[in-house]
Image 1 (tube, helix red, strand yellow):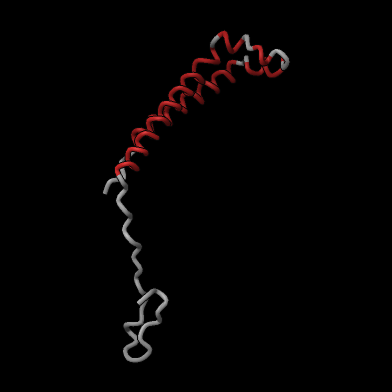
Image 2 (cartoon, rainbow, N blue to C red):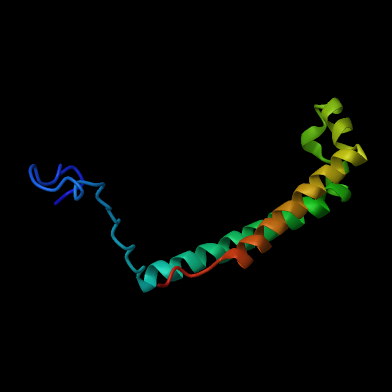
Amino acid sequence: MDSFDPGPTGGDTAENGPVLVIPPSPRKPTRWEIWRSRLFLVELMFVCFVVGIILIVAPWTEFWTNNSLLSGFPQVREFLMYDFVRGLISGLGLTDIWLAVTEAIRYRDQVE
């Protein structure tokens, strides 16, 4: 009997109700899939920590103020020198580190 079967055509109509269809149980992940997800988590945490630390520290260094890439754009350079913008970028770095910590706490192996 499948979910589109109208049921018996004659006889008792009380048995002609909805058919419960249960999806198959999810398959158990292989050992390699578990380790692959763990390695991805470690890589994600490393990248998030490095980018976060750079974004926290860089706006307050000499590199930020004497950037030769911005010498042709004095208005952009002036905008990037505002303390509010520097704090905003440092806050983005803190958010990036928070993301890494949250992902590490939330991670669970999918072993069943």
